[in-house]
Length: 255
Image 1 (tube, rainbow, N blue to C red):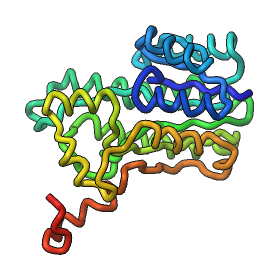
Image 2 (image 1 turned 180 degrees about the vertical axis):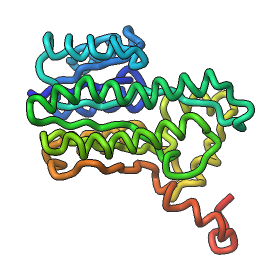
Image 3 (image 1 turned 90 degrees about the vertical axis):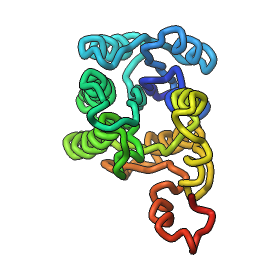
Image 4 (image 1 turned 45 degrees about the horizontal axis):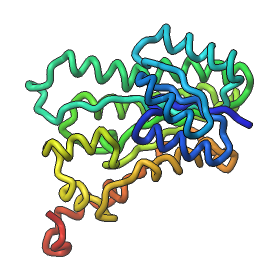
């Protein structure tokens, strides 16, 4: 049985990924700053849980070593831990918030990839999937979050080329607007409008966490053995459909 570690595994896409991978026969290590939530997910799927703040570089290295010592070699890593930012103009975005988002999303993905990926490199194989975002593909009023997700795609490509000779594959998935607890909170508060998000996609609906989880599972699998350095959008056609809003008379259903 192969082992996979999932950061941010206590909720949202991370939790869905843990569930999907467990159902596919992986031994799942659930990593999350929410220790109680990680334990709950791990107990339900027959995995193991460790508390982890990806913003703490020393803690990341310590947990990676502990997982390999107590559970065994990690064959797969999913970097799903991340935080959102406020959709505000640059002058209204505090630099402290900008720094925090970059520290967790971008730096956290990088240091976690190093902690687990260098061990994969030494063994001569493994697979990493990073969670980026469709906000990396377009301009959006998320002046810290989108920057980090663009950087994650660059990190993915760079590490894929760096570690390819050691048979360590590195890919990313870019979810669209996904009905995660974080987005649901913004919908409930009125900060985001579900109908507007749905109308902006080709499929006219929000994504579900499991839909990204299945793409992640594929990239970790042997079926994707020849795939590295790519990003797969799981966005319901948001990227494909955006330009159609410029032709309202052709597509009268666009906002």
